[in-house]
Image (cartoon, rainbow, N blue to C red):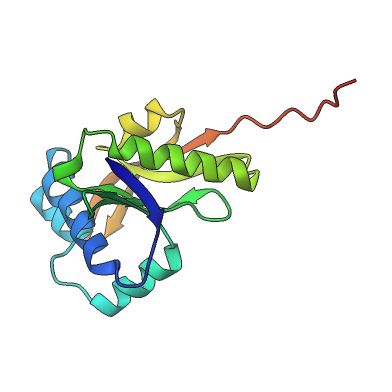
Length: 163
């Protein structure tokens, strides 16, 4: 059973473990070891990470009481982080998180969502209606990584008054 909740103080270390797992164990199929090490270095400042997670205020997915994924959506519709641990990949956790983000975006009345999406995650995002706007090469800690700017236009509630 997957449950999704809001971020809580103290979640940051488990979210870091999800982040590292998703990159070092899943994205490694599309990126070199040097690229994944630059993207998700094992050595990091835990306080900076905790502050960043607090600022993102992500949704947190748990299975059996264990944090297995997290994702955020910002007030402007930007998804900054969307990560599923290797142990939970391909088991519906990401889909549950994306449905939560889409529901949140609808509640906020957002016209769409955007994200910079890894090669690994592009098919998943496309499944949920995201389209590639631009293929990119970004530099992260001296390594060049390919990703794509993607967007999803959200259907808006009809503004036509019923007569």
